[in-house]
Amino acid sequence: MAANHSLTGGAFLFHNTDPKQVFIPEEFTEEQKMILHTVNDFMQKEVHGLGLARIASLDAEKDKDLVLEIFHKAAALGLCGVSIDEQYGGLGLDFNTGLLFTEGLAGGFSFATTIGCQTSIGSLPIAWYGTEEQKKKYLPKIASGEHGCSYCLTEPGAGSDANSGKTRAVLNEEGTHYILNGQKMWITNGGFAEVFTVFAKIDNDEKLSAFIVEKSFGGIELGKEEKKMGIKASSTVMVFFNNVKVPKENLLGERGKGFNMALNILNSGRVKIAAGGVGGMKFGVQKTVEYANTRIQFNKSIGEFGAIKQKIGTIAAQTFAIESGVYRTGANVDRKHAALLSSGSSANDAKINSMREYAIECAILKVLGSEAMCNTADEAIQIFGGMGYSQETGVEMAYRDARITKIYEGTNEINRMLSLGEFYKRMFVTKEIKMADAKSFVPKAILQNYLPTSSRFLADEFERVNNLKALFMLLTGVAGAKLREKLVDEQEIVMNLADILAMAYITESAFLRVLKLKAKGDTPADELHIKVRMAQVYLYDALDIARKATSNALDSFSAGAQKYFIKKIAGRMLRTYNINPKDTRREVADYMLKKGGYFA
Ligand SMILES: Cc1cc2nc3c(=O)[nH]c(=O)nc-3n(C[C@H](O)[C@H](O)[C@H](O)COP(=O)(O)OP(=O)(O)OC[C@H]3O[C@@H](n4cnc5c(N)ncnc54)[C@H](O)[C@@H]3O)c2cc1C
Image (cartoon, rainbow, N blue to C red):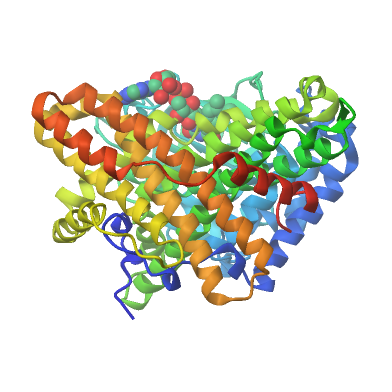
């Protein structure tokens, strides 16, 4: 078998990935699906199945008692311990199963944020960076839900620029405790958390460190619950630290390494946002399809109208593509984790480094997952018409809830910049992505456009995916050579390049999935056909995005003969994709309308 470049984050750009080396969601085992069923059943029993009155109570801002009641029931089922190893009282799920769990949370509407925080940014700092003593002390109570937990990075003056925080920790004279002072903002689960991971600078350090802080230490004051646009079934407060005495042994990880830690925890949170988005999008497809099948106007169900089919076809295709990218990435994290363990890494290092490896992919998924989720919620409202705007159907709530995903865990602007920044870092600084691979891949991909395309199944599509990769590299190389260090200030161009990079990864993930399904041969023909169609719809739209991004970038930084020449090549690489977008979207929509929702 060929070398598995999937074990290297970002290396997808310069290789033809073997579908055998890609995990697809259809390969989840019965045991893994049980996790999804457990979460779905729980959310059905406690939230969604109890109807709109229940959902509306959760959405009410009066108090968080109901949220906590459901939280404790979820904890009793073990749902707070999905990311925690068994020896510390958790379920010890692998990362990809954890993503499946996150997808299942969507049925809990914004209650999902509460459990999501507990099992992700709330607990992972200790689970990944804690000492044995810290893990033994804190994780069992977090896994059992006895202790709520939260992640305190953001401050009023330090949002995207998180490293500029002013919260300070000073070692006392006895050398036994850090005295912590400062203010954190937007802290999810803060209203009921007992354990806070707090990022603060020690003395006059320039870099952040991290601390495990218990409410019982005293000196912690909570602000009022924020009045938010959405995710109201989650607590969000300001947290004030007034001379909090934190035992010295509660420093988490190494002094000055807090920012790296914070970012790496966010890598995991980012792909989880996309996984939650997949759950939300599937739910959205199902709700819109049910409504489109039953709402009659002009003596027809509205699902019979092309304008509605166009929307359903598009959101279903987005769901499929993002889902393909999420679980491809999750499985790669698990494989990297196993590889690191077998090469002698410690348990913590294997977790940390397997996640860090895929920083590019996580940033891409955060951006595209959140934007697809917001688009789905928006289109759901449109399909529901006036009823979508009414509180009665719950669709407006999904729209409000979805919106935050473009802001937290790093805004989408920051994540677009990060995907490109990480690419540069891995290519030119750490050299984990090999320039030699780029030099061999890119010219071949460009040349292929001037040769006949093979008649193999999906050969045209894979050629186009490779074009996205090669085009990204071509533009990035030329922009880098021309603008050099000024490129970071030309953010509009960075956004354009990041869009092309993102489209390359997600379109490839969708087509690798259908290629693998075809090779496995056990997918019913009609289902495989629709999955191919969904990948094609996504590619069609991705090429449009890439065309726009390419002309925006080139018209911004290039001129004269260079611009003319590259536009010529790019035009060839992004040439018309010969599918009928109307018919293809209709096919997808009709399949969903007939099935009554997304695939089971
Ligand atoms: C409901 C909610 C829950 C949250 N939960 C948590 C939590 O549990 N823990 C936690 O620590 N934080 C949490 N956050 C904070 C969240 O992560 C931040 O809001 C987010 O990182 C953005 O920071 P900011 O709000 O200060 O926006 P700013 O950083 O002020 O950004 C404002 C705008 O400027 C843009 N911008 C900023 N810097 C740049 C730049 N260099 N280049 C280009 N554009 C830029 C941004 O993209 C954005 O569009 C939460 C926020 C919300 C709203």
